[in-house]
Image (tube, rainbow, N blue to C red; front, side, top):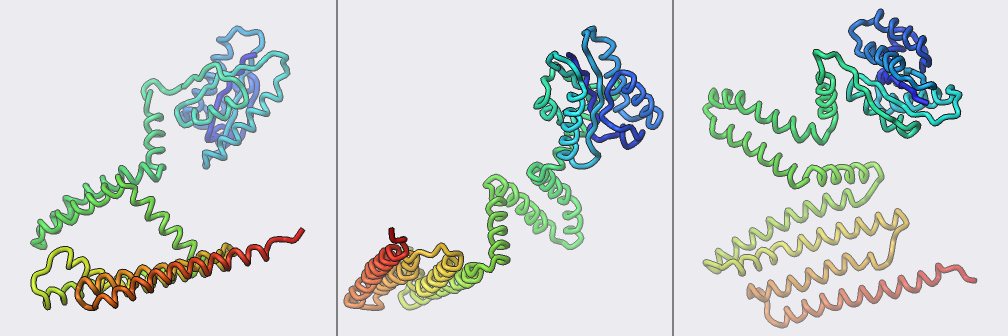
Length: 361
């Protein structure tokens, strides 16, 4: 059996004529088409309904039927679901022992987006798009542009650089009035370059993930949100301290090479960096404990940070001649003992506590 299925995705028929859908049968579809043409002669769905009647008369199959199914005006998802429900209703009304094949009639690309929904219910032999001859591709072009503008990814890729480029001319005019043409052009060009570079490297996805994690941590009461901020502040202070140490070494020792400058930078920053690492690791341990994911081996993190800091402090101080070999040996020993002892202590604690937690048979 052949079913000619007319699709009105935005339900112009129901909204403008009051017809209840689905509409099944040649006479009923023709009546609906006349009613819609009377209510709104410019509606393209009028052509769809008349084309459905035309195809029904054109086919010579013994068993054939024509029907109109509609969606809703608004959400595409809701419209597709309603069309699927109405197709099921039409198929339930058909009393035939033959397999049903469908020919879908639409008025453009937007209505054709529902074809996968229809195909999941009945095989489709063909799709007939009906548009006014004088505007053959107008609706398809409109729908394509609408989809491009609705897509956040495409919108950000196309519209943002275009907007920046369109702002160049008015900004240059303002800059000439302020006697700053070169600066303004450089700033705009730099912003456009940074944006395109960020899009190319996918920086926006990393920023979005970082913002989502910060928002989640803020509302979930995560301690790491606070400790990471404190650690970042300590890192900045440490970087400043390292730069000051490099300046001090250059003042006292005259011209120094790249290696000595790097060692001085590490020596001036290592205490603050170690504090940042300890604070961040303590926050992470606290969160793991609060969320019942705590493991004793997590406690190794702050001790490892202190061990590394002790080793780096001893090596850099010896290299800068701030200390002797005995101090270096002591720093290396302390660092090694901190790492080894903490590993053994927390490994033993985790092994014993896990055995206690195991249920006895």
